[in-house]
Image (tube, rainbow, N blue to C red; front, side, top):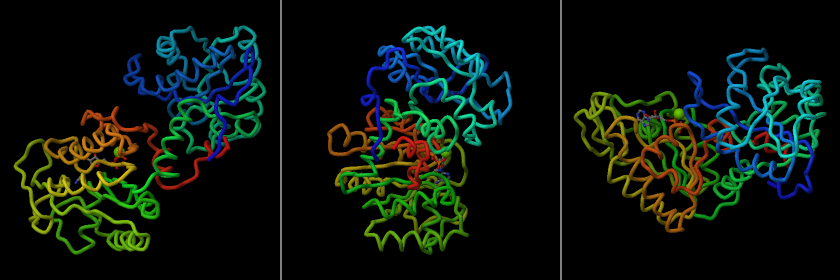
Length: 396
Ligand code: ADP
Ligand code: MG
């Protein structure tokens, strides 16, 4: 998809930039426990500050549902953000009106202000055109640097882009380019790894991927549903037996689309769901009635590594096993390391996303070796489902 970037902006000195960013960081007891999202917006803010724009940052924080809640004020994020930016930041307790106008008068070129939580206003989530017009009146142009909020058609993620000249920020641009390289216009063969607990949460992902990828690797709890649908007794494993027909339909669709589906043929099982219980490594046909499949087996992992070796592109969502509990992290860690090594060698473009997936890759120590790891959560999954993202469409 074509979209404008900061490269398409002319001289912005003295112009007011309304930048939608993601400031929705985990915050407790006066501190930000993970500042990844804050660090992600620094390149865009710094670039526009260096280009002497006046910068107004727009973001939501928590779920105040259209009312002012002081414990969800973005004023709390100003200090952590200004320390990362190494520049003083003004806080403005409104998102439009005279207070905002006066603040802009005070701001010098290259100065930065954070406006209040957009979700304090009911018109944010309603994407109210009147609110959008009131906010847009303060800006000369709009930049969206919050891919993670792009699956929502809200005032600050979508509405503003229809009123002001709209551009993707650097973080948004990097995310869109990585996703385009992974599924939009990828080098083939393409492999997808889909794991995690349940088929029911990833039906749309699976249905979309079978038409796009050459190899679909299914692991995690959801593989059990596919195995059971094929008549394999998965014992006491997590399994959605009522989705057997759905699983078979996905396998049929894959077959029709020339997509090879890889289900595990061996598994690591246990009778108890706890750290380091007695385990067995068995063929999937040999799971006992009181056992649970908690990880993909080592023989299957080796075969999956061979699949990745012939592929040029990989997109990964969902761990292959219950990776939080040793030793059921083994398959995820091994395959992630293979993907990382192939990426380093230059033979594979690897893109991964999803809350637990990011945690699993960090646990394997390879997150920085993937081509791109998306921290966008919901927006990443909707993109994997093939759904248009309103915040991205509005930039086109
Ligand atoms: P993501 O957050 O990356 O989208 P999911 O939330 O879909 O991933 O899946 C992660 C969860 O799946 C983890 O909590 C993991 O323990 C669980 N899981 C993976 N394999 C199994 C399994 N065989 N049995 C039970 N749970 C599993
Ligand atoms: Mg999850």
